[in-house]
Length: 233
Length: 233
DNA sequence: CGAATACTTGAGCGGCTTCAAGGAGGGTGG
DNA sequence: CCACCCTCCTTGAAGCCGCTCAAGTATTCG
Image 1 (cartoon, protein in one colour):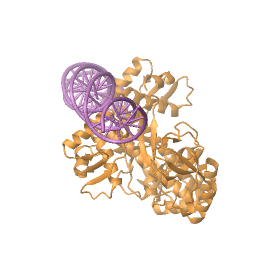
Image 2 (cartoon, helix red, strand yellow):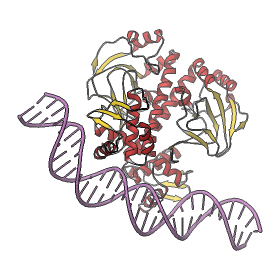
Image 3 (cartoon, chains in turn orange, green, cyan, yellow):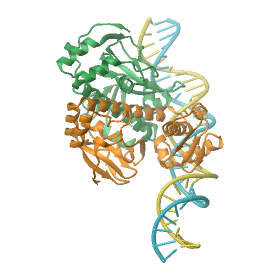
Image 4 (cartoon, protein in one colour):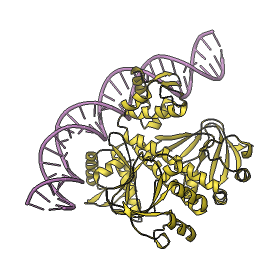
């Protein structure tokens, strides 16, 4: 993690639901209080259990958000990217981080100290609005994870649910066929679906056999997403 | 669900992390835009899949928040009570409710339409701050559920985790012994831990046999919470 | 007091995990 | 260029845990 330079005012990371979708004034303000930082692949941006003393606005690069148990088993909650905010919940609640964030690639981010961020929220309407919306999105994502883990009876069901989720993001789901690149290893897929590496292998093989998945390395096609959704619930 | 009367300005539901912890001006404002409503036990305050067109501020009574699958299996995310807000995430994200909220007892609440609530947030700093904080708390709760479901290998582990959570809330955890009243049926416990009714029975029996639980109907004592935490992880 | 709901216990089965051993690909260095 | 290593993936075999089905008991409530 070392300092870098990147100007919020001219930055192009600004989706509809993106936290950085702010008024020009707020952006100037943000540029003033945020410290640019850089993380190398494999570095931890946050560590589960550490105090929530700052947030990170992701400028570039992707990050893996995980919760892990004492014995090392881990659950991947989601992959965050540019425009996402890390560490928000802990900063707002004044507690420890409940998740670990690990850089998957070299990442740029703006770090903002807890007090500064809270003041920033207090000062700018749009910041507190976007903060609330961001937390709402993260909440729904977490509920989705919990749902999957609890309600999908079989391993097939859980894995199918993960693949369909990636498919929906991947490319404007034509509902004819989903096509996307899976950047996760089977071990990571297992950690998203709450199952073992080996079971992921076997289940993917089953999907292929049943014609529900065409796979070339990391490139995946789900020819019949609708059927898939129905079949493996 | 029928109308009732309750004045936010004089209401005493105002914990530290409570949404209703607002300035007097905001409370007057709130009183103006909120419609008092009442739900009988068993009624649904929200239904999963319905559009998020209003939020409910809980004034009295408890509510069960669940996510359910197509086949009727359901996951209990948490029990909400006075001071909690229902439907926030859907209103903020502009989507459907991802959970169902069922009144466990007669409940009073203030309903606020989506547009009014968003305007209210925009108008009052403290409202948008509290909204963000509320969402952050809910998020951490959801992460906890997902964690439990994914990372606790065995049924014992999951159930122990649920009991310990109730124990922590129940009474100022002296760390000597936890004592609390469990208002959930075994079926509901099963739905929190992602297991079956029968397995809950068997596992509770095991806990009793092993001296980790003393149970008289709904009254529970965990004599050795620390050991319990370690043993069944 | 009867009916409904909640809890208990048993038996059997199946799917997932665990353990184990081997294969495929990509990168590095001799 | 090949040998080696590392990581990731694949497949098999065995065993166990929790689910399902089923029958019976306790408790709550009208």
